[in-house]
Amino acid sequence: MTSDCVIAVDVGGTSVKAAVVDERGAAIAPVSVPTPRGAERVADEIAALVDELADAAHARELTPVALGVVTPGLVDEDEGTVLLAGNLGWQDVPMRALVEKRSTLPVAFGHDVRAGGLAEAVLGAGRGAGDHLFVAIGTGVAGAVMLGGTAYGGGGYAGELGHIVVEPDGHACACGGRGCLEAVASARAIARRYAERAGEPVAAAEVAARAVAGDGHAVAVWDAAVAGLVEALAAYLCVLAPETIVVGGGLATAGEQLLGPLRARLSERLTIQRVPRVVPAELGERAGCLGAGLLAWRTAGREVRP
Image 1 (tube, rainbow, N blue to C red):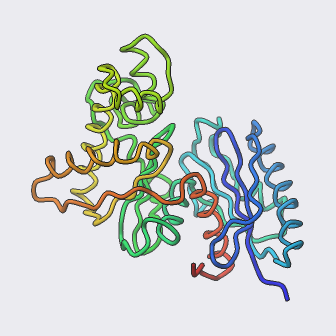
Image 2: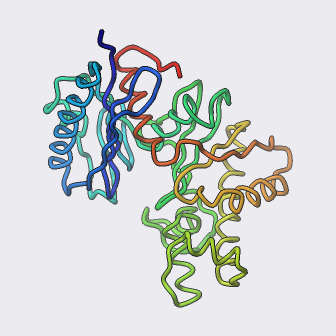
């Protein structure tokens, strides 16, 4: 007897992650390939992955009933369009339509961080949290505004926490502004700011390690990143007052080195605002792909029950 499943695809700036996702939200036969250049070639790669994963599903007596695809950038889920994705070089790309041309499955299309927030809400650290914020801190900084079990999209513009100004007249940001959180607290910004101070290029993870070891330049850069996060989150808390903030992305692997001071400084910074629980994400790099799977299940008219 066969069971239903969906196929999930998470398009990133450097790799495309895909998997079969079953009715309980488990990823089966995960695969990762380099991201091709150009939207048409990405759509071709997605089609090839769908064929490969459909074979893997059938071998396990599973039948794919929908396909979920998520991408970075400014994403209008309703229109199925990537308005702008700088790291992919895309502008006004009708990605859902490109995928639909190549697939017989119903296609759900979404934003990678909003999908990650959905996955954490259903399968990870956001379970039972109600309305909350999921923050992904990696090469960039973005958020998923989780309301009523769904990430609020705002026509593709919601959740851009990384572009709240936290250092007026600070470093230039890729968005065209200055002093944005992303130019202060992203992994890319931490590495750049350390190199400017110390004259040595190292990755953000190494800056974190050096901060623990007492390197003065690393401590200053890390403290500035935490301070920037506190300012951006304080602004968010004034408006939506979530009880919980789930922190994910590559920088979250620093664990309590990041979350400990973030909690303490938020408590000090806030006055009349509700002080939220700040917890680590649970799904790591799987969040976007699993979220794509959950979107696909919703397109198929079903909810995952882990």
